[in-house]
Length: 154
Image (cartoon, rainbow, N blue to C red):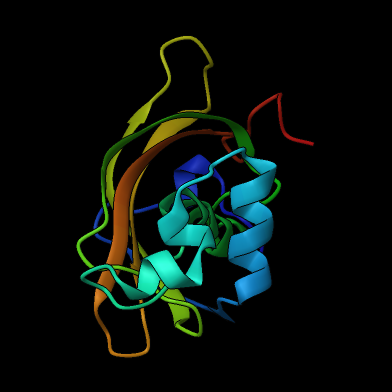
């Protein structure tokens, strides 16, 4: 399923995204080094083993980016004008190497754009869950989305 146009979304609609992803050491290492994040809890197995978690923690910004990425194919692929912002980002549980993650999205609000007739702003609540069904990340994402009859339609 490709992304939906603004007028196709309904408040309360929920999607369970089919793609799942097992987080690897390489994912965490590359993301942390590419973003210049030297946090030993993400990169140093010895330091991490002495922490309260007893193991390496996956970089939270990777977890967040993965959550949004897993949702794109079902939400905004081909219909997005722009992501306008993210709010209420939480990491209620840690993510560890080897965790398999899946995402869910709920439409919590929508309104027509004042500056782009036919387009609108959809607020998605994304949740990322691990294999134990624990929420490891969640946020609100506000996206400006093309309308099906919009001139900005590709």
